[in-house]
Image 1 (spheres, rainbow, N blue to C red):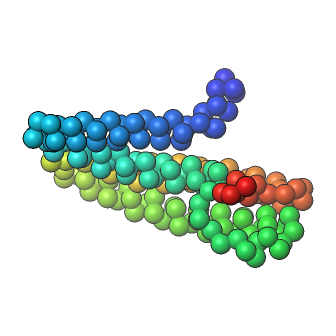
Image 2: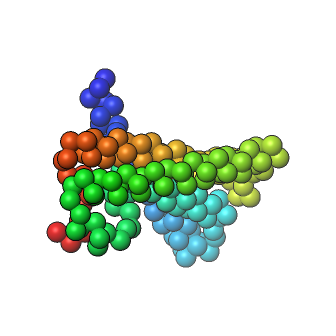
Length: 171
């Protein structure tokens, strides 16, 4: 089982991103063909594409945290030693964790209001809770990846090893 958990840790976001991306592309292609060839389109196709894109964005944010691929200005960090870099990354993780916890709380507030009033989407006639859950799911994954990053950075700070800085774009 530990091998399965390691594979899940490495690839969970990738597989979820693949599923939502394929759903988005296939639905969009079908809708374009329906509109251009048959002069007919559906409202549900637009909703599927929209909500797939929203899930893609939030799961992609968690994946970017894991890979340290999010946008950052790191000119000063290049002049620091391993311990200084680890300290800066820990500080960034703590700030991002605090913001993520606040955002997670408020995103659940939106989901609960939708649950309370039973709102449904216009085309699919599915509870909006499923679509609004993209934000709490994304922030939950983001928080989990931030905690992992924090632990790795603390270990790097204690041992003096170089901290993982992510892959460079143009190497």
